[in-house]
Image 1 (tube, rainbow, N blue to C red):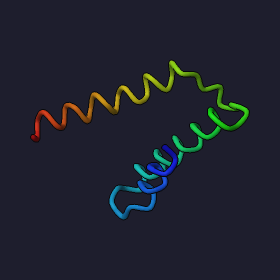
Image 2: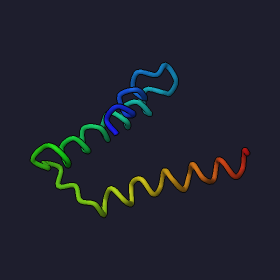
Image 3: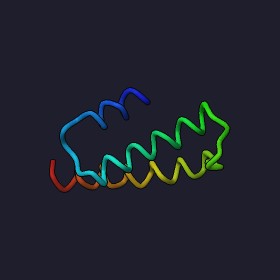
Image 4: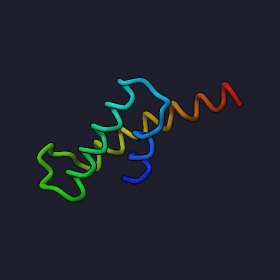
Length: 65
């Protein structure tokens, strides 16, 4: 997971805002799995967060096959 996020951050594509979002999610995930969970993240939040991206990706795939 972290490797994919790091590769995404290294990619030349994407806007600054997109890269900031990926970097923030990397920080939150590291804190959740390896840190002290200072952001008080729970699995329900992560499921909702990533579900939104999954729905959008599926919508894009259906619209632009």
